[in-house]
Length: 128
Image (cartoon, rainbow, N blue to C red; front, side, top):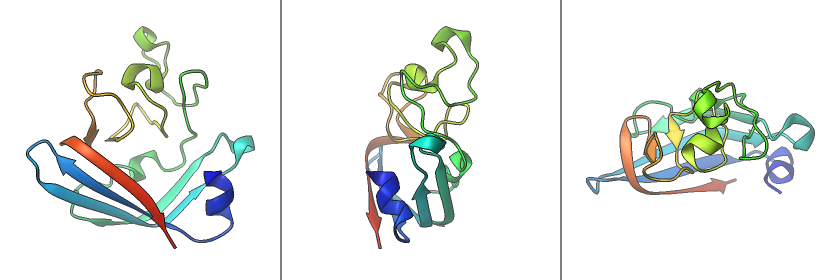
């Protein structure tokens, strides 16, 4: 489980992002932790570096994980039952709804993106 792993040691999180124009960007966080179930898998992230511009995941720092059936975000749009996972098509640490939408579905209201960069693909991984 991600929370058990990140709570047991210090981890970095790295994103590699390919824009729709085929340019590549990266973003790295020197500290990445996900709290446990009793905290709704709350995100703790800091130490952004990279060439992707805006600290898009940092915007969601402190947010709890939202899914279709577990709405933990502050979104209030009645069209989506106030749930960003419903609006964007995938679970994530949403905050109105997100600047870091690397887990959503293309074509849903807000595109598959990193802040203003519309994405073709993304990958993320942890390093020690």
